[in-house]
Structures are given as structure tokens and as C-alpha cells.
Image (cartoon, rainbow, N blue to C red; front, top):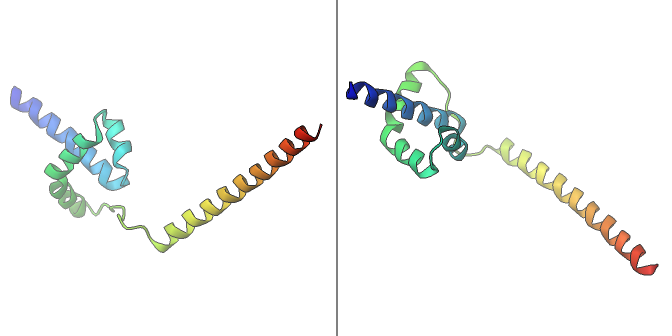
Length: 103
């Protein structure tokens, strides 16, 4: 009976390792599992090879750990947009401050 429980826990750990590999979001996966990220990393060390092999046999795609040029461009564009919004916000606040002080 105890052996059945162990297998259930092992399968559950492998499920979360697979989720982390598929999404490449380790902190989010650890949170979903209700464990500390270090615990998930420990599971990754233990089961990653086995889970990757299983995923390859199934033809499941893994997310690339290395960001692509497209990813960098998208992040750059988002950062520039946010920077522009912040610059506009600062200009509006400076203008409001000047108006308040001139009264």
C-alpha cells in the first residue's frame, strides 16, 4: 500500500516537471504545485531526463530556453512603449506641479 502512494507522488512530481519544461515558467509551476521553487528544481534534477525522453517519444514540443530574435524584438518594443508612457506621465506631472506652484 505504501508503494502505491509513492508511485502517485512520483507521477505527480513528474507531471509538474513536465509542466515546467513545457511552459519554461518554473516559479509559476512551483506555485501551482504548492511547493517552493527550490523543491521543483530538486524534482527537475531527479526526473528531467526521464520526462524529456517521454516527451520526445510523444512528440511534445519543448519551449526553447534561449530567446529568439523575435522574442527580443517584442520585449524591446514593449519596453520602448512603456518608456514613452512613463516619459509622458513625467511631463504631465511636471506641468501640473509647475501650475500648482505658480498659483
